[in-house]
Structures are given as C-alpha cells and as structure tokens.
Image (cartoon, rainbow, N blue to C red; front, top):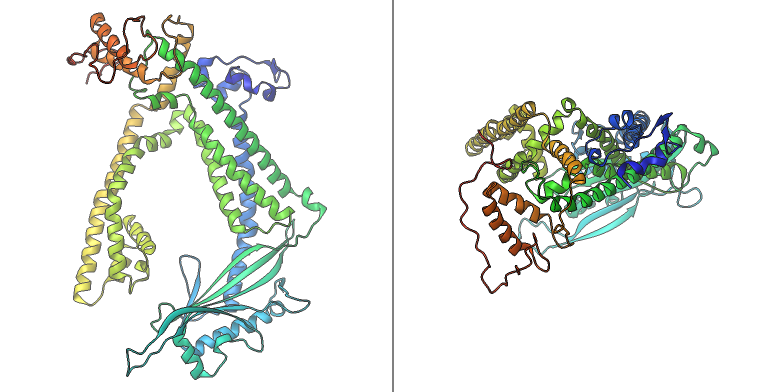
Length: 606
C-alpha cells in the first residue's frame, strides 16, 4: 500500500469518488514533492493534515483571545489590589523586572508597623474589599491565620569591646500564627527586645490564602496565595519587603450542566480531538516515508547505471533525510502541547483537580506558537513565501559556530561587570541581570544609561567603567553584530540567486531517480543482505569521481571495493575473491589517485 492509499477511507465516503470526482492514485515518485493543492486538484484527495493544522490555528487563536481578554486583566487587577492593601505605596516602592513589588524598610518601628498592617488588613479584607472574597477556614467560623515563617541565627553577639565574642551562626526556622491578639510574632515585645531580635533576624515570610469567585460563562472559584517577604539577608541597614501572589483553582467546583453546553467546552474538545487526529496522521505519514526509504534504499544499491548528484547527497544522512518531511516531525510536539493545554483547561473547569494556572498559560502559549509556526511549512511549495526559512536554514550553521566562539568572551564581560559594578548598580547585581543588560546594550538599548550608572567619582572605578563599555561596544556591536548581518546577507543573496533550497532540489532529483529505478532491471548480483549499508553506494560514487569512465581503472576500483565490503558473499560476480584477513596484506593495493577527471559527479567549472 502506498502513502496515497492511507487516506482512502478518511478522504471520501466512497473509495473511488471524492466530492463527485474520481480519486486517482498518487505515483510513488511524486509522494516526496506533491503539495496539498496538487493533491486536491490533480488527484482529488483531501489534504487532511493541512486542514487540521488550519483548524488548530483558528481554534487556538480563539481560545487565546478569550484567555487574554478575560483572565489576564482579571489576574492583573487582583495583583494590584493585593499590593496596594498589604504593601502600601511609599517613596521606596518599586516594581522589579521579575514581577516582584518591593519597598525598602529602614527602621524596626517601620517593620513592625508593616507586619501589623498586613495582619489587620487580612482579617478585615472580606468586609472592606469591593470584590467577592472570603477566607479559608480551619474550623467552623475561624479563618486560617497568616503564617509567619522566620529564619534567624540562634545566637549572634555584636560586642564592640570584644569583637571575638563567641557567636552561633546556625540558622533556625520558626513559624508563628499571626492573630488579632498577637499580630507581630517574634516582634511582640518592646522596642529593645525587637532590636535584639533584629540582630538575629535573617528572613521572614507571611503567607495567607483568600478565595474569590470569578464570574464568567463558567463560574470559577479561585484560591489566591499571597506571600509577603521581609528579606534582611543582605543586611546593610535595609530590609526589602516584597509581595508575590499566585492563583490556583479551589478544590470545590461550582458544578452545573451548563458547563458542557458552553462554547469553551466545545472549543477545547475540538482542539483535543483535532490534535489527536493530526498526530496520528503525522505518525502514519512518517511510517510510510520510512517504507518508501527502505524500498528505494535497495534499488539505489542495486542500480549501477543510475547516479545521484553528490551536491545534494554527499552523505548517508543527506540521502536518508531527503525521504522525510521535517514538518511532520514538527506536528508531533505541536499536538502534544495542544493536548496538554486542553487537558489542563478541561480539568480546571470540569473536574475537582487543583491545577496551577501558570502551567496552563505556558502550555497554551507554546501550543499557539507551534500551531502558527506549522503553517510556514506549507510555504515551501511557493518559494517566494519561504525565503525567511531558507535564509535561516542556510545561515544558521555559521551563526551557531560564531556564537559559540563569542560566548566565552560575552560571559567574561558578564562576570567582570557583576563583580566590579554589582555592589552599587541594580542592572549588574547578578549574572542574569548583567547578561540582560549587556544584551540590551548590544542591541543599542540603554547605552547612555549604562555609562552613567556604572560611573563613579572614584578615579580607578571611573576609568575601568569607561574601558569596560568602550571595549564591549567595539567588540560586540562593531564586530559581532556586523558579522551576523553579513552572514544573513550572504544567505539571502544566495537565496535570490538560487531560490530553491538544496533539500527540495534533492527531493526532486530523488523523485526522478525513484521513477527511473523502479522500471530499470535489477542485476542478478545486486541481492543485498541486511548488513550491507548505504556507504557502499557512496564509495562507488566516489570511485566514479576519481576514475572517470576508464573501464580498466573502474574495474580496479570495483575489485578494491569488493575486498573492502565483501564478507560472506560475492560482489560483482567475483566469487574468487576472499575478504582480506586483518593480519595479511590486501589482495590488491589501490594505486595513487590521479588528477580528477571531470564527470557528471566531478567538480563544476568556475
């Protein structure tokens, strides 16, 4: 059965007719290069994979727009609300790049007031907020108190008269329940006791939960986890207070028969079934391409009169990969991400599963990207629309090699910047922050700001900061980026001169070869055993390149190849030859290679 027969029952209700037109069998040699349009118009077969990908793109776009218009603004509004209530705005109020909202606290009194405000606002939140919020209860009507997890040193002494006073820097962790009666936990004493504890204090986290109802077509019960952190690990007289909120679904689900009648449910179900169907078709197509490769593999080794262009099939891997469509492989992870996203979506709405919404948003985003990217695979039949992929595929090997060469230098600048400027510049405080800053500078962003930030009045640091920026910009912008642009430009120019990619030309040449080799007679001595590999064919091609059409020299080369590859069977009807032993000399030495003679496989003229 050929690849074209695998969709017979799926394409049409009748095996012989499709939409009133008689279905035609697709020739084997055209299976590698036929487009969905040709498949439909010429052979009257429905291109199911293309239609399924198009359906996935439409449905997942609708779902993404629905998620972005409903959930994202709602989550953002709740995060702003929690920040304003539990961490009020001050002059030191900042929002960091990783989503944390921070403010700096410089005194013990300010720290205790902040902790007390958090506890008071928590217990009054359901009555003061205009939203639909309620507590998570431990017992009947007792709200779960906020948990204050404190990390501190067991015994730290700061004696100015005796700097070698014994101290115990072992860390202990204690969790306090913050109630309206005792809202301060370890800071419940007077000011002097709070000051003494502050010397041992390292880090504290206040964690509490709030529920609210998200009214949509399918009502959702959301459980918010709010974590307020007081970080004094850096010390230095400043405590960083930050707030971070996360949302999951409640254990209870507001069940209703309307769930299964909503448009959200049908969109998710259609996406799930379509992705499963597409993944099955992709696996089936890959399997049929593998069978075509195995059949052609035997004919390639058995037909001595037929030759392949070494420009397109210079290795065994190039020969194998010409049979397989990369976009069928790409469809498989695309379908997997769609299936995971839709299962999470359906479990979130229609079951009691408690799933983090962050996982759903990540998988949905990756699935949407993969679906849209899959559409570019169908532009390969129209090369004017496939230029971007051709340019990237031709330039990518050089870009990767050059990037690996420049990466150690870039990391060297990153570590130098972190060590030299991280103590007083936020943009260089960590290796990650430094890499982000340098990458922004590399792309022409915040150049002047970075110059000003790392400059200090200290003469040595001022000179070093200037040299740091000058050398980095000269090396990476004037050299590295321009080399990247040059590589991309060369690839684009080569695409303009020869718009057909090498792999597509190889597939078309292979199509002609399959057509010829299928009708050509097989020699009696071309029966191949499973241990013989395609390398023999390419060695035979290599001998044709060196020896040209000289029958005597080609005969000599064939004898040499037979000595190399024959183990338990004869090659080219030379049954008198036996394989050389490892401890004996070969039966025939290969003479010195003369000047190459130009043949159809030889080098082209300039």
